[in-house]
Image 1 (cartoon, helix red, strand yellow):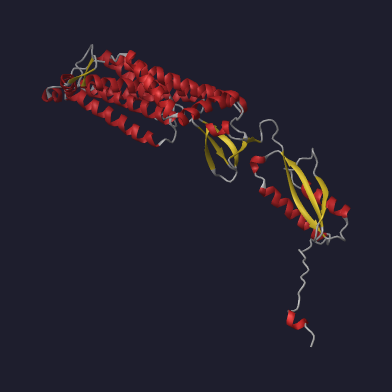
Image 2 (image 1 turned 180 degrees about the vertical axis):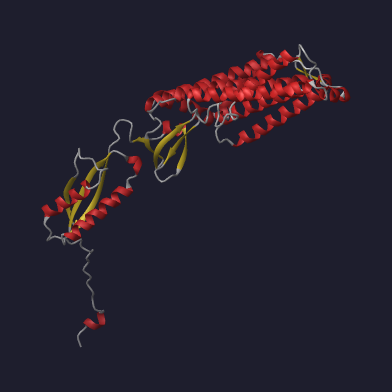
Length: 428
């Protein structure tokens, strides 16, 4: 939209004092009410939207739909009123609406694309400051003057001549293109990952990461081309980057390549319970560079993807989620062996987590120095709920059962021989 800058403050104030200014304010209020009503109706029609939705957000005014609708309705009202009355309020209102739409769109896209990233806060503030500063310069009429001054600052880079205006326009264009690219990639990712589990989730995660990287690369090329930068010069930069990756970024490149290999082969999937580098846990996320493994006790380990390919990794849920556990028990030699076997089996079967097929087994493993040694073996299928806690509960049940039947759990016994000093052994 093209608005003539307000150069004469007195004439602008006089225009605001006209009765037609009230009509402009009333039309803006009507646009605001209509935009709010439309967003409310759409939210109600689609049901409760996802909190991570860019269009809707958590509340009516939180998403991108509300400021964009308000901007569109304001533009339409401005065009209609300009045919009948001279405009004054809209010369300020429209730049404000544009700034609101830009800020809300940029902030919401960044929040969804980079969740909980520390840099998001800084980017949000940068977008807000740039948008409001541009609005003030636009309304005050200083923007064209500033752009003309920046256009006078020129320097030559190779065969191209750059100016301050080119740099500012290029940065804004690149930012806008990347925001749109992130919006599209976030929408594709949400659609791909919706209601996906197991191996399908890992494969769709790989497609999502590849799509985002490709879209951001194409968006960056488009932004550079729009500014007027010769893209053929990037071939030299690409060669330099290749050499840098070959020598200085081998590990980083290996981790990225390993991430795509893991997601493509599905040897490790989101939700698998793995053991790597003496750390056990469930895979909660597979990123391009690293994989997050969460242990049952709440600890998380960030594992570089290359480690998952070059080291031995135990995937306890790749083919069969069942694992075997065992506990050792020693009883006195005068104990009833059949009764001990029955009590150990019953102690294991008391817990729902112990599988009935294959059934728990008890064996007499050794004639120990202090008593008979038995081994109780059983299977579980929910390793994510912990192993040590179940073993402790079974040991407590065994101890209670043995005490209830007066079966001795022997203490370690040792025979100590003492010898008198040599002077006491001599005759005389």
